[in-house]
Image 1 (cartoon, rainbow, N blue to C red):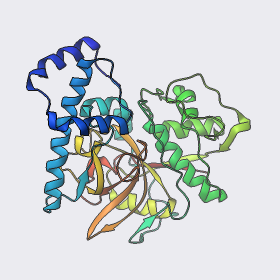
Image 2 (cartoon, one colour; image 1 turned 90 degrees about the vertical axis):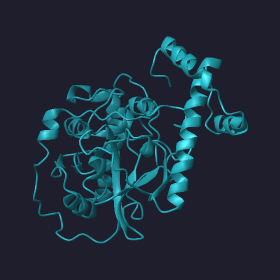
Image 3 (cartoon, rainbow, N blue to C red; image 1 turned 135 degrees about the horizontal axis):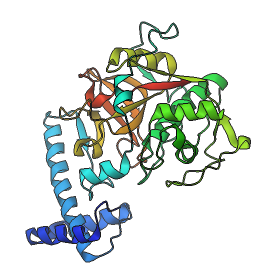
Image 4 (cartoon, rainbow, N blue to C red; image 1 turned 120 degrees about the horizontal axis):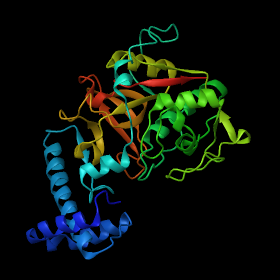
Length: 335
């Protein structure tokens, strides 16, 4: 869980120890540790984590109070990231690697005859059976693999009528020569290129997730889907993203997930003006869009488990200047 050396951790803990912990929060701290199965290697580490947790609690409490007074459109919660710094969460729970050339070459493959000019007001591909259950990538930078398989799963359902969980571990282990780096990050179109050239990807059942880099063990007998090509959506265009989601199905996208407000999200329509549209580090899956009390939003499936957000999902503000870069790195596979 730690992303700094033990010596540095102890130094930091020692430096903040004099501020003291709030004794009135002890029972809440113990309960939270039980819920999220938290264990620490030393008293020093626990103190360090406790103080981060208390700081997070104060932030979440104030934010939710302000939300109740109409200042915000979303709530936060004390999820399993509450004892980690935002930098730690970003380092361990994201993993999207984007080259400068990739950022510069995303205005291709448009227009397309299969994309409708007018999109419906709302769509939720979960209701049509295009979306598998929420997964948890754990402390492996494999968000790109989960985003890619989510888009592949949707297209498999569209083509065959079957919804099958595909294997992110297959992509983690086997797509290195396409520019991916396993648990150290990757990119969705690199994953699509691997599936195209490999002529398939295994099912999750055949190739289960382990959350760490292993040798490639792809088996043709476990193959559950193929891919013949992929498309990219014009960079930064939420209009084209909306039309594509409506016409195609779930779409792979990248966002900035470095803010504490995103990491502690719980419910409502997320909007934070500090969220960058160019500093993109996390891959997710757009599975729909709609409007909540006059506020348009994107419906997003994350890969941080069902205890994060709204049962693993987040609604992100739509048509707010490409919030968090939601439309900067959008792509989808073809079968």
